[in-house]
Length: 204
Ligand code: GRF
Image (cartoon, rainbow, N blue to C red; front, side, top):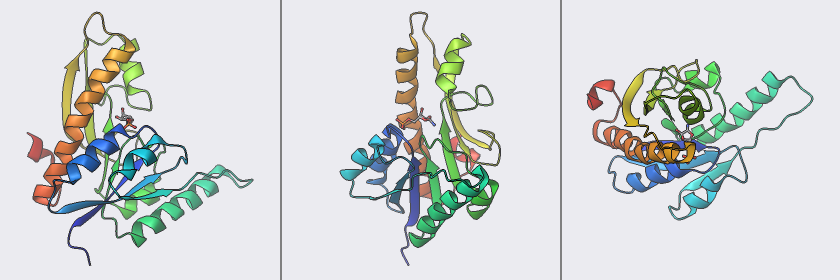
């Protein structure tokens, strides 16, 4: 049995947060990112993972004639099997664009973490930057939280703000936010490395 805490990253796209976590993990003593899992065979996160020599698994979502719920169940079953086979103990979502079922979450109680690009509870959902920007906020933020059965509603671990400047475009606004994401998510990973668990109090 591997003594290091085994972590999986789930990502669907670009993978810049996965990259920041993979890089940070190279300096950690007690944790290991053992798996990067994606639901998209063309996700750039696959390219990014290569330099770290971490196992990558692609589990595409397959739509069949069965009801959507059944397809989702079988997709998640494949993912859970892979996680169990790799002795995964914690899951960090890093731009994973699927909502996990309550069954899936019950297999990893308080062991699934997500990063969301807004100051939750404001602007949950898949377009955190876009929604905050078009609402005209003067400042926004980044939230890292436990995943529960709701949408971006789990207990918050860490949250930080960034300002929107009057001349920001959506692109500059997003790139400021992403820079902050890449600082904050490794901080959370480092706390897990240090304490073997995660609590809000570690970040206060
Ligand atoms: C990030 O903005 C993250 O907060 C959100 O999805 C985006 C993923 O970006 N959940 P990347 O794939 O890590 O570059």
